[in-house]
Length: 72
Image (cartoon, rainbow, N blue to C red; front, side, top):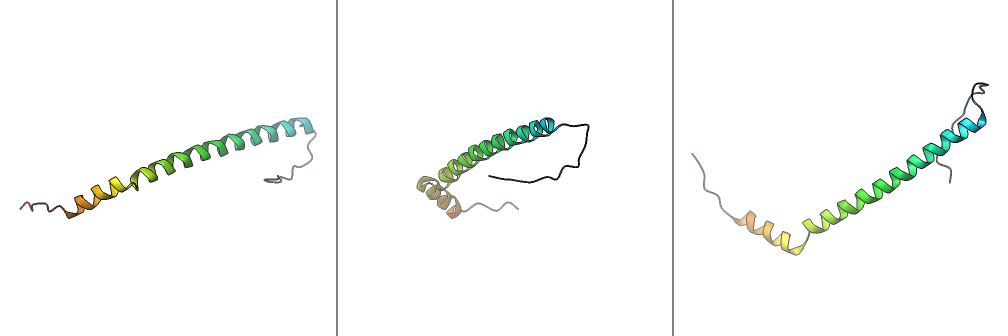
Protein backbone atom coordinates (compact mmCIF):
# COMPACT_ATOMS: atom_id res chain seq x y z
CA UNK A 1 0.00 0.00 0.00
CA UNK A 2 1.42 3.32 -1.06
CA UNK A 3 0.63 6.16 1.36
CA UNK A 4 2.57 9.00 -0.19
CA UNK A 5 5.14 9.75 -2.78
CA UNK A 6 7.85 12.32 -2.36
CA UNK A 7 10.06 13.63 -5.10
CA UNK A 8 13.59 13.85 -3.79
CA UNK A 9 16.06 16.03 -5.63
CA UNK A 10 19.23 14.34 -6.70
CA UNK A 11 21.75 15.00 -4.00
CA UNK A 12 25.15 13.45 -3.85
CA UNK A 13 25.34 14.03 -0.09
CA UNK A 14 22.77 11.36 0.78
CA UNK A 15 22.79 7.85 -0.55
CA UNK A 16 19.63 5.96 -1.46
CA UNK A 17 20.24 3.78 1.61
CA UNK A 18 19.90 6.81 3.92
CA UNK A 19 16.69 7.89 2.20
CA UNK A 20 15.35 4.34 2.44
CA UNK A 21 16.09 4.25 6.18
CA UNK A 22 14.20 7.53 6.66
CA UNK A 23 11.15 6.07 4.90
CA UNK A 24 11.35 2.93 7.06
CA UNK A 25 11.38 5.04 10.24
CA UNK A 26 8.35 7.00 9.01
CA UNK A 27 6.53 3.71 8.23
CA UNK A 28 7.16 2.50 11.79
CA UNK A 29 5.89 5.81 13.21
CA UNK A 30 2.73 5.55 11.09
CA UNK A 31 2.14 1.98 12.26
CA UNK A 32 2.52 3.08 15.90
CA UNK A 33 0.14 6.01 15.40
CA UNK A 34 -2.45 3.71 13.79
CA UNK A 35 -2.21 1.40 16.82
CA UNK A 36 -2.63 4.38 19.18
CA UNK A 37 -5.69 5.60 17.26
CA UNK A 38 -7.24 2.13 17.39
CA UNK A 39 -6.69 2.00 21.16
CA UNK A 40 -8.22 5.45 21.66
CA UNK A 41 -11.24 4.52 19.52
CA UNK A 42 -11.75 1.48 21.76
CA UNK A 43 -11.64 3.66 24.88
CA UNK A 44 -14.10 6.13 23.35
CA UNK A 45 -16.49 3.34 22.41
CA UNK A 46 -16.35 1.99 25.98
CA UNK A 47 -17.11 5.44 27.40
CA UNK A 48 -19.98 5.96 24.96
CA UNK A 49 -21.45 2.56 25.81
CA UNK A 50 -21.21 3.31 29.52
CA UNK A 51 -22.89 6.69 29.07
CA UNK A 52 -25.66 5.24 26.93
CA UNK A 53 -26.45 2.33 29.24
CA UNK A 54 -30.11 2.06 30.35
CA UNK A 55 -29.16 2.72 33.98
CA UNK A 56 -27.43 6.01 33.11
CA UNK A 57 -30.29 7.10 30.86
CA UNK A 58 -32.78 6.45 33.67
CA UNK A 59 -30.69 8.47 36.12
CA UNK A 60 -30.36 11.37 33.69
CA UNK A 61 -34.12 11.41 33.12
CA UNK A 62 -34.69 11.60 36.88
CA UNK A 63 -32.26 14.48 37.25
CA UNK A 64 -34.07 16.38 34.50
CA UNK A 65 -37.36 15.99 36.33
CA UNK A 66 -36.05 17.33 39.63
CA UNK A 67 -37.10 20.84 40.52
CA UNK A 68 -34.53 23.05 42.12
CA UNK A 69 -35.40 25.94 44.42
CA UNK A 70 -34.71 29.42 43.14
CA UNK A 71 -32.30 31.51 45.14
CA UNK A 72 -33.05 35.19 45.24
